[in-house]
Length: 274
Ligand code: IPD
Ligand code: CA
Ligand code: CA
Image (cartoon, rainbow, N blue to C red; front, side):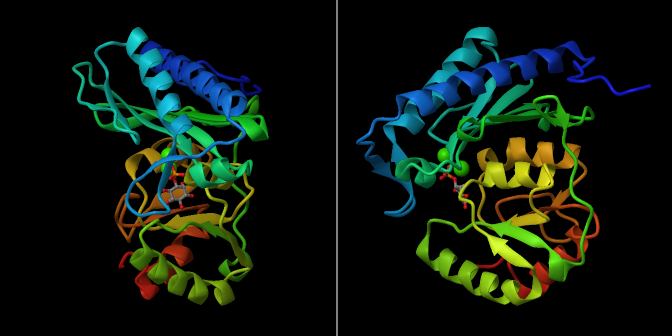
């Protein structure tokens, strides 16, 4: 029996959450793509002078939370640009309206809208909309990960010395300096490293077999919620320090066979410390 293309989740709640996440992502992606002013400027800064927010980050979050709460008024929200409410339905949306803001500010294509739905604290739906790639990545817990009609699957694991691994750097200078030291020690142990500028896309690239792995310290829940599910549903292992779930302390995603030695090396180097 061949596998159905685009299977609809059997759980009607998950089917509804997936549809809503896809539509919210599509609308926000179109707003960001088509509405980007030529003279786009920084609206404010957050944790440091290089941690920027544009008017478009704010507009995209407003669009997403407005759309979702119109359809599901009792759900909770956690959004990077301020949405925060517990809700009463057991469903909470975790949203990064624009992941890769610095790329977006400069007109580089690697940015995405990231929308995840949690049910009773567990991520059950993840959508990453990457308009300038023309790609929408999605996953439902237990239902696989897809881009369009293509089922996503991680690459076969190479030895760590031949692995292409992506990472990212936080906005706070002291943490960046330490992350640079770790990256410097990682480079001779790998094929190479990449710094794409969007954690959500890095995780989807692991899922799509375009990277052998990804790690980063300092992520927020909205950076990783959707991408983590997509990576896992494509066969990646994800975690933090040994035995831990991915978190702000450390997030690692890679196929089995790369994950374990990568996690070991990051543990040896103390990559979870500032
Ligand atoms: C950032 C991106 C970047 C990662 C940073 C994130 P933002 O998110 O995902 O790749 O290295 O840690 O904060 O600020 O563009 O939404
Ligand atoms: Ca982000
Ligand atoms: Ca963001």
